[in-house]
Length: 367
Image (cartoon, rainbow, N blue to C red; front, top):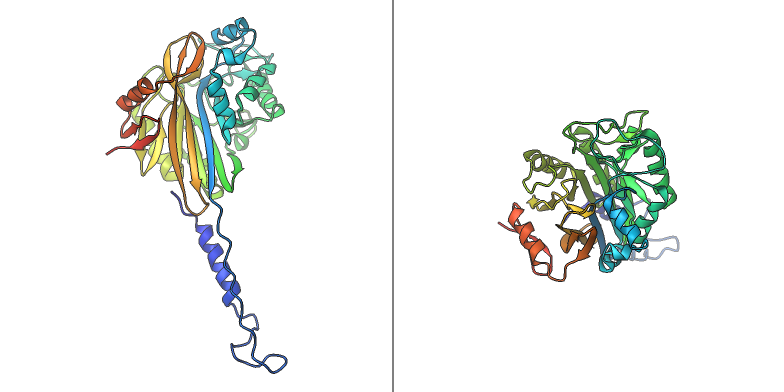
């Protein structure tokens, strides 16, 4: 819950309108016709409307044309609902805002980055998959968006823009890479910010004053500035970070320490990617940290996963955020909703710091 200072300033301004003199006469003094001045009618300020918005977040997705999941999609005649559960697709489209991690380049150009074991590139027309999923914004601060060099990276930005999809965490220069994405949703302003510290051998270029790349957060100073900027302009700040150890449920200490730094800077919730498996949940100062959503639709491995749904209710001056895990399983190149979510909930509880999952998927803070 957050209370914005501007609401107090608005109240003061309204009181000033009612009580300010501006040449008005004392109550009971003679007016222009010599009679008592009429009493000033005090109008009640309009009550703020109560908002209720849903934000959906999916983890790592790989649409590389030569990769196993895309080969499977082609074997299904291009029917995405044969690969991703229609119920999950429906929930992503129903959300007021849907965000995914774009773990590849959209392009027909470029050459694989030298020295990388895995490089991912998808034809620009595959961006229609994002449209089918209802994606509004893609996080690009990761270790694969620059796999095919600057031309392919530029194509990625153009492809997303032409498809009506925003992006964060990368850009044609540092200013663009540091720019949050803002959304006005049912009277609330939501900001999405994104940065990466995923590479042990850092190869993906960081954006510079006049050069393209991603926003890094090995040194947190710049990302703290981004978060603080977003906090000044938005009611809800969602901080997306690409971090952690691949295929490990164990958190790196730097994940926990920097999560605290981002919350102190103004983040209202943290959503992580990169580990390709679920990681635990921790609350700090009442703010939830979802360290990794794991694979949403990425490879052939059988892994528990989820769609994260955040619900924000209230007004600009007073709102609350709740979170729920929509349980799913990635298996056989497909991601399916689980009718029985207990395996996912139990796993998350076992690897979380101070969070529990209720039978309906609702996340709560434990002692």
